Length: 372
Image (tube, rainbow, N blue to C red; front, top):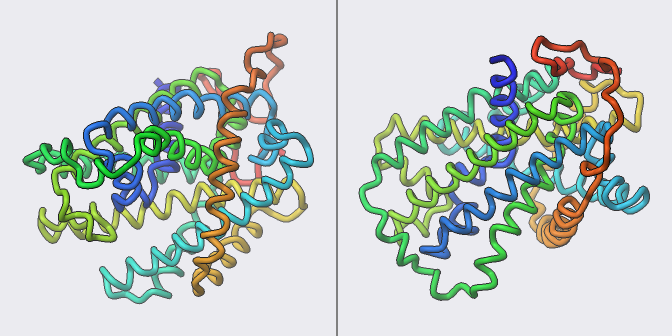
């Protein structure tokens, strides 16, 4: 039973990292799936296959090569020199994305709760830091709360959606080239899995129990697919009116009353929080690997950088980095699928590692900066 609960925690963390604020807002689902009309569910199923098998492979490969951070995995895939360069680009991209998300969290506080943008950003940074100093256990705990809440809201909104007919006559479907449609699940999976390795790599290398990791990947990948499908059906039923909103899902939630709308906005904030936790944790692990600085100090510095950068607009930076990162993501996904390290014969299992064994045969999660 403990092994299954740990697998569920892995799945929740996986889902919370992939299905972040972009999903909760509805924009990602609209861009990658809903606008293609009736083939949207097929595209979601294809993306889910990638999430199940590649997600499992990331964690198992991290455990196999004893990767301490995503840079170790990139060096394994691309070679020492290229892997190091790519990891530095990832660091900049992840920091930039998290600065944008932090600014978005501040906007949620200002626009929906009238508490002030700077106040919202500081609250978000403080919560992130308090959870990060708990290490992986903090990330597992928060995702174990947020992801089921998100699933419950998806069920509520889906149950209140009367008509799925527009799914079969999406306004943009006729204008979208077929190649773009079939590339969409590949691009969505590649980009999100590349970003998610920041937390999936240390998660896999710390747990190191193949059964738990495989179950977690299956539960997580299927869960991601079901949530994407729910979002697709909900927004399809509100086409074309919903196209004019920046946060389509929040607009749908508004029709369910003030309490549901308030709660859903809070859920979007929570999704920003879980994604930031995963990303900053991964960056901290990478930097800690190269320095003698304490993990808590590194996380605090990274959060402060996000806070400072979040004060300014840097659209040109992201517009330059995103296409480059998207191209790298496709190459990364190809190399991940092609890698055969896990197919090689394994030597007998070594004795228990630096973390104490649990009753189910896995390894307990260390506190932040532990395991050295």
